[in-house]
Amino acid sequence: MKKQDMNLLESYQKISKIRANRDATGRIYVMIFVGTLLIASAYWLVLFIENSNLKQNIQTIQDYLNSPQIVERSNEADQLNEDVTKLDAILNELKSAQDVFALQPTFSSSAVNLIVAERPGTVRMNSISYSGDAITLDVSGTRVYSVSDYVMRLRRSNAFQEVQYSGYTLTDGIYNSSITIILKGGQ
Amino acid sequence: MTQLSKREVFLLFFMAVFVTGALFYVFLLTPLSLEIAENREQLNQLEFRKLQTETNLGIIPQLRTRRDVKIEETAAVLSTISNPLHAAEFERWLLPVLAEHNARVVSVSLSETQVATPELLYTQVSPQVYRLLELIQDYNNVTVTPITPLPESTTQMLYAEYSYQFTSTFENFINIVDEVKEFDTTYFVSNAFYDINNREGSITVRVYSVHKLTEQELLDIYKGDFGNHPNEVTGPDVPSNPK
Image 1 (cartoon, rainbow over the protein chains, first blue to last red):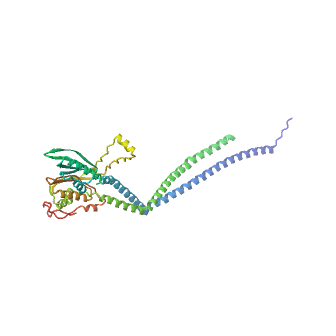
Image 2: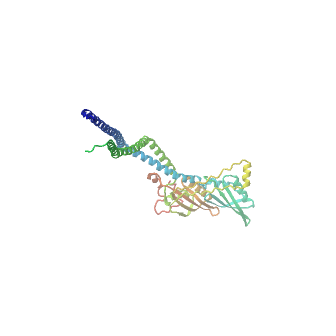
Image 3: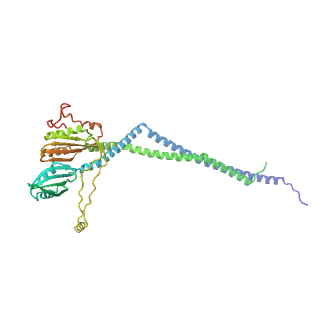
């Protein structure tokens, strides 16, 4: 016959053990939850402090940049920079004009005196005209070689860029011709 | 009340942690991180501006000096170019010269002032080059320097052209041309003609002018009335150059 044994203490201990195990698991879960919450809060706090520091630094720099003294001096510096840039623009604009002016040939006594000085006695000058960079001489020669002599003398002077000669015509015993002298630049 | 199984408890725990974490991440961490990123960016920009400002403030004395030097340079270059002038004002330059050299003015043509770029009245005569010459130069080790292109100006200026026809001696004609050159400004004789037989001469002067940095510099242009009375005809008998 089977023994009917009602060991209440043993049953109670079993039940308590099961309950204790269940409570311990719950506590572990709660601890993990609270721990995670604490770590996250700490991280948020670190971020919050960092953000506060950033805001403080921003405010400090903004106060510095917006202080009337700095604004005034900064405006002065900007104005000076702007002035220098504008003056540079004016100078650059003028440079190309200066280059042109520097190379512009000039009609003056130095060229004319040389032209007159080189003239052979057999050549008579009727008129002299200047246009742009060319001096054109309207001359008359008493000899057939007079004008070419004159042209050769002018060429030998090396004072001009080019001496152009295109012939002559004989009228009433006078050899009429035209000589074109191209001036050098900047003279 | 129904007892929860271990698995259900774990799932509940997991859900609680996940939901709390998600809410924490979405509503607290993310906005704060974004704000920090924005603030960092703003701080970087401000620090850069501060650095720029400090640099600018530090070089204010140098900038003042640099601006003064530039003003001097610009004024010096501008002073080589004529002030804007009216045709009547140009006559204050030329009539005394014509008078001084006993030139009798026959006719005058004065153009309107217009805006133009300076034209270079110069042509470069290119040497003739052909293959055999190149070979000979190569044999003689002659280095041919390439022709440098002529400058072209894009600078717009005020421009006018004034032509004078007069009678005078050839010597005086040349002296007049020389005097125009000696004005040492942007007045260029672009055309000139002298007929030796008839003792008639003419010159055309191109005048380029620009405004100056300050209005005060422009005030110097007025050179005084030439005649004694507004209706008096000016001629070669006038006194010295009013310049």
